[in-house]
Image (cartoon, rainbow, N blue to C red; front, side, top):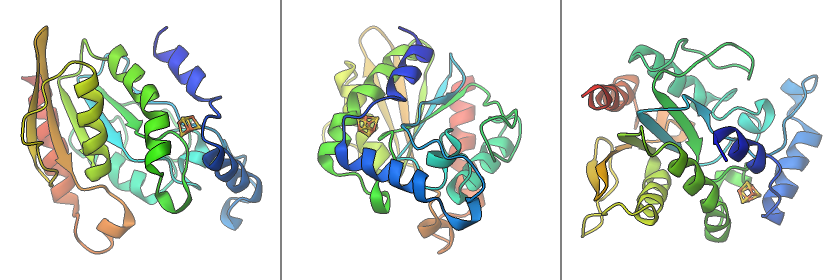
Length: 231
Ligand code: SF4
């Protein structure tokens, strides 16, 4: 099975009852400002290059963002920040991501959510996180030949990346590398060059409204990813 099959498979997954109910309730009710639009209301596959050198790992789809548009990070404020920065550092063909057919392409980069369904209050339970982990594992395995850099957005993505890459046979340093903005850890693999994991504050409104994450800070980490990927 390839990336397309994994995307098709995940998009009909119903393994987490609470998330299935939530994603569909939100899609049925709709936010008033999107009342005239269709909602996807299903799990969100990965998006971007099929042989990426950079994998960006987020948390989970936003209820009225990707859960509406069907494309990861597309149609919400976090995505506005992320795609603008990807574009500034040369990893996206345009700086906006409004809907799934807007022509946007990522350059050498693939974008995935750790948990593929929108969770209430953006907080999946540990059980939901673990139930969804095999989808991330599959996607990581399918892009393993090309990925050299993994950007984790937030500590949730950082921990998920460490667990996924450990399961894929990478060596996770002891003590476990700590998440931070700009943190770097090399995860070696006996059969290849391994990957460099980069930590980046999540471009959530909680971080961007408060100035915890600024545009230059985001560009710094994504620019570092771009530079490492070209080495
Ligand atoms: Fe399936 Fe993941 Fe959605 Fe749970 S969160 S229903 S495992 S796609």
